[in-house]
Length: 544
Image (cartoon, rainbow, N blue to C red):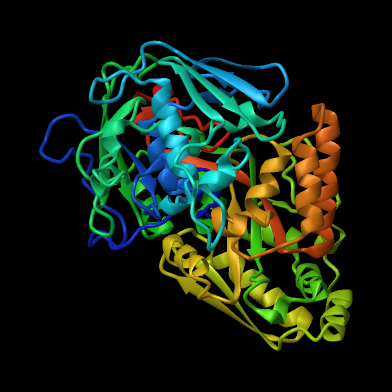
């Protein structure tokens, strides 16, 4: 799910924005809340790709916003293990039938209690093919998914999966079609939030009004509707009845939408912004000296790629073409110079932060310009390449560095193509309009090696996930499925690594770098932290 926008990961690894204020791409309020009153804590984001419907949000900008509005069933501890949050307990005897007990005290922002039926409603809606939700693939392991999502050209035979049962108001029983040991780990992801009955209109569809002003059960409630393309901010207030930890000395939160990472960083320095987790590459080298102890460089579990439109452009059909492009990229120099050492050269499809990574596994990720040129010529690679990237995420410098590598080492014409924002490039990829190479990033949905495989490269993810290149490999799908059903975690990990080996052989995407989280904050706040999903932990922040 979590395709990322930013040159750095995290929330700022998120999306982008459309038109913003006259200051050149970001809303600046000079630190004063609209209409007077309490000054909000202000965070930079890009414009979410869709309205704020958690079942249709599979990118980091919208997910960052929704993480403030909803409380997940689980969060993750320092050992990357799931721990109950909105859930009281999540248990299973066989990894196939799971019982989720909800914590008491959670209410919707309209005051109504949250029940197991609210989760069943959400997951059934997200899975249903007729609703065309981007998160649908995440429910594919639930028994009965094929009944609500039979595939292209077919019609669902029911609206409810037989594997979902609200036993009572606080108990949800989930039966999977096959054992899957990672199921509890998945439940911290955006797709698994609940949905109130009021979200649905008379036609049974999530209303536009709900997408503009979602009612959640998390720390913050949305103050006013968010209008895509026009709103410069998304404004929120702490929900008094939230049963968990809340900010200590502030109640107002404002997400400020930017179309330029550079503008956001300028606003951070001018104290017109409080949290910036999408520092542009151009700022990283000086951020430490500018921000001092308000700058952070931390490990991150994301991966930056060059994506390949395999299914939509026959010029890239030969894997040797992709391998040659990969070997022509000088990852070490790019990460050391463009990113000032705050990235690491990628040498696997699995990030080192997650069990399953193997150093040097991707041999085609090793810089070898002489072999790259020979391989490219023998494979009859195209004489011209285009490199698409979102202009709002701080990617220009490293994409141009890659373009220079390919020109020099392959002897071809390479043209970087900036899109206005991440939404624009995602929309064109969704519509199969763009057939050039493209910048892509992946921020994990949950801490498992499997999350680097199925959602990005699984065949089903072409229509229901983030497989923008259209990669298909039945052997890969089958091995991942065996890993999903493995009797223990160690055996499952071995199978996931076998699937990783297939990706290394096929190179459907070209891993370029492993992220680190580079973020900063203003002197007006303290205690800024990011969780494993690169989302801000709002309850930890205090006004200075």
